[in-house]
Length: 72
Image 1 (tube, rainbow, N blue to C red):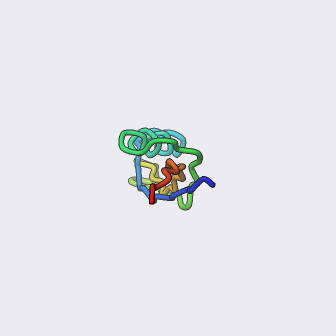
Image 2 (cartoon, helix red, strand yellow; image 1 turned 45 degrees about the vertical axis):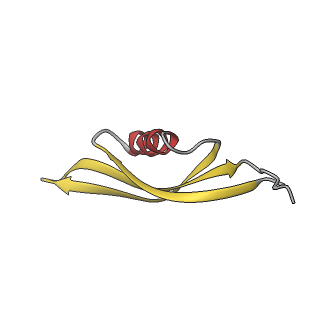
Image 3 (cartoon, one colour; image 1 turned 180 degrees about the horizontal axis):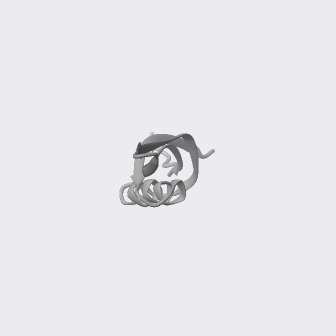
């Protein structure tokens, strides 16, 4: 049986929500293997002078953990 873990990460971008999501995934992939899905829990944007200046996402990333059987 596979075990799936979930981590929550926050990432940003000056371009778009899509880019912020990609940044979250790329950063998580540096230390997490077997990523299976990303769920965007929340999206935020910072505004200056009536213009969006940055985008942010709060993402849940799920990954499968290797199922190692222990002897004994």
